[in-house]
Length: 215
Image (tube, rainbow, N blue to C red; front, side):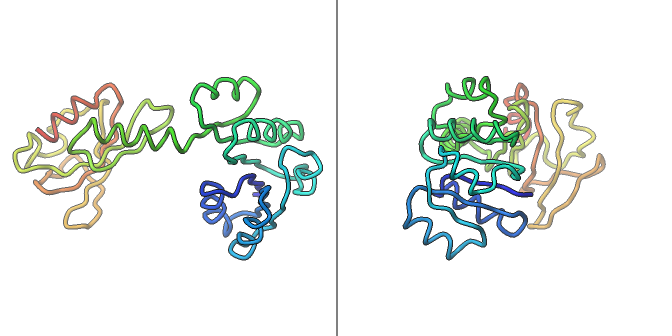
């Protein structure tokens, strides 16, 4: 896939590093020193310029791009450059810093918006609100979450078979780490105290599942 990334701050740099071996990348940033440093680290074409200028986007090959990602630190730059990319028929992803901008971006045709700051804040908030949960991931549009927990000794589910928990359509145990060994559980699998588990759960049943496993 041919991908253009504008903005080579922490988000853009990390994204480029993760994609460089799998895709053809062109990177754009307005800071010449940053471009010089990154061109020596990442296997990609690096262009020093303003991504809101058609000339720079065309130099980057916007006509042939499969995906344009704008992750500069300025929402207006991400919006403007993404709209220009859309005019060439390219799929776009734009970073936003304010959640209320999401609807505006989407109404204007931006395919996907992301906010690392908002994601991080929500992640920390959820971990604070849910003691006992080690980690979590949001699934889909927030309709479900994958949560990581360690089964305590006094848990209601300790030493019970998964088929006897009555999860039904509310939650699904998708993996168990027993002595750091990954297991894909079945209905006959017995949950033991100290097991680290990953559970896919509908958002409205989070409190119910937390009480079942942790209390």
